[in-house]
Length: 106
Image 1 (cartoon, rainbow, N blue to C red):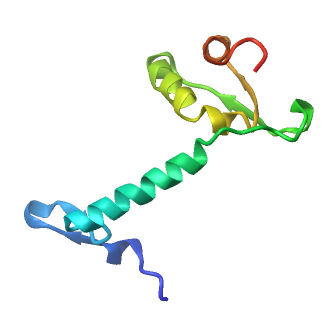
Image 2 (cartoon, helix red, strand yellow; image 1 turned 30 degrees about the horizontal axis):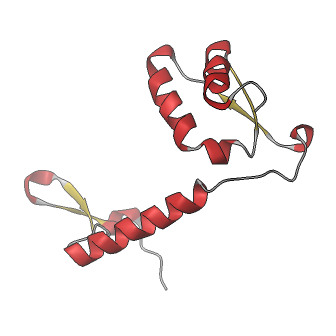
C-alpha cells in the first residue's frame, strides 16, 4: 500500500480551515475509531509488574514548569502503569507529587 504524504492527507475546507481525510465522516467510523483508541488506552494502562530490578530499568526524568504541574499530575495519574516501567527522577516538586500519588516505596 502506498504511503500518503501529510499534504495529501490534508485538504482545505471552506473558509480555509484544514480537515484531515483520515477524520471519521459518519457515526460508524467514529464508533470504530473510539473503540480502537479505547483498546489502545486499555493496553497501555494495564497493570504492570516489572521483571527487572530498579537499577536495571531505564531512567525517565519528569520535568514541568510550575504552571504545568496540574497537567503533569494528570499525566502521572493517567500513565501510572507505563511510568512504572522506568526509574523516575525529576525536580523536587515533581518527585514530591509522585510520592504523594504512588507512595514512598514506588
